[in-house]
Image (cartoon, rainbow, N blue to C red):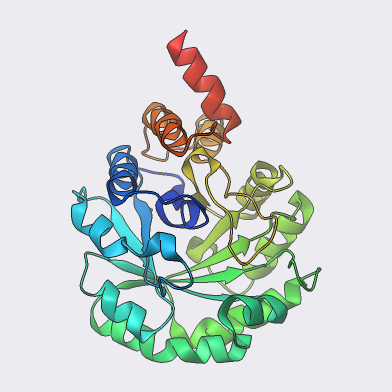
Length: 302
């Protein structure tokens, strides 16, 4: 976040949004989506995932997408990496920030990455060391911080244990993810306040899925707790291939409408994002999942 903005919004649509699409999305469409979002002013766009194409075939062309982009000076391009092999692939591209990932739920860690939480974190020691040597920024994403599709409740204490285990990696940001969108405002506020007792909230990002329609409420609660970084996905794209029933992240248009209403500066052109949300929804052959996006687009066309 720079001095000109009050809130940093990380756009995850090109990666987290598209990874779960069953239909093949052509590279040219992925690249145009990412470029439109960069041009709209997002300071950070999560573009690619260097996981095995066997597990997430939709992301197999990440290097080509990154190569096609004309990146503004103010923006950072991010990519998800699962291991050293993924990092080595990312280093051949224009990736400036890597995202490593674990979970606050042992059951989800086993299903998602086929190992325990402790094992997942240990795997990232050499990844983070090499990324630091290469000058990359590092985010650590923690899935299922407010509930798990396999074990149900996830305690705040469990989230804190994972943050404590990640501390030795000295990551730049922690992504606190409500992967299946079950969180509510009271829980979100208490979670963020508790995290803030040991971690500077300027290093904490709220990553809220909107399965139960609570993402905006959870963002407001997190704002009240002091969080100033949030993730969103244009047109509400997304879901997790390993979290049955999870819908997309909070729609970027809905989040921007909220921030505009609160008078919080993001540096992002809301109208351009609305147009992009409409465009990508047309490419995918379905309506946008953003209520604000639909309303603002209809108003602009009236």
